[in-house]
Length: 264
Image (cartoon, rainbow, N blue to C red):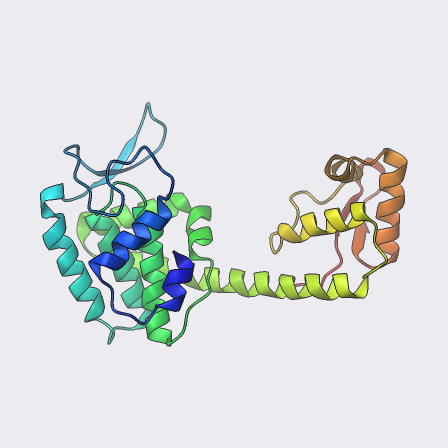
């Protein structure tokens, strides 16, 4: 879906495009009645969070009978609103879409894709940002902001929350790209000097970037990842420190290893 979005970000939105995206997002699902079409089930469509035994209803969407008219209005608005500021338009697009909640499932992912489409159209090029990741990290704040805006229809606080989240996503994406470059540089510098175990661990540590490997890498982590015995793990880790790939902190059972990289 995101590849299709980036390739055709400047193409006006259509019903057919949304249906195509929905089929991509729900590909392989067997528990959804309508894939590639507006929801039709009679039960109320509610945005709910929390445990099953104590659900919190944040919002109840318009009924299925209203979907054709609601989505025609949404598509018309999005295609005619390019004069709005980029973050304003992207934030309203997401809020508007998830309030209509036109699909049985996948509305959040498609709503975030619409935000990225709106941003790309305003910027004139695809915006490679980790928006979904940032929203997932603060899911409670996301639902709270949506709920507050929906209940009052004063969406300024939502737009502020959304704009701050987009900026956080941009920073995260920039740091992720920086770490990808750091990875290439390190593996180029150490080409032919690492054994298979060391390569596997370095790749695992880079996958955790830019957040870093949680708690730091211990010798026990190294053994778990590689299957190496204790003496081999110690020798490999010492070698990686000497080669400048890792930096060591702490002593004895508190010893931890981190990628030896510039601070972001």
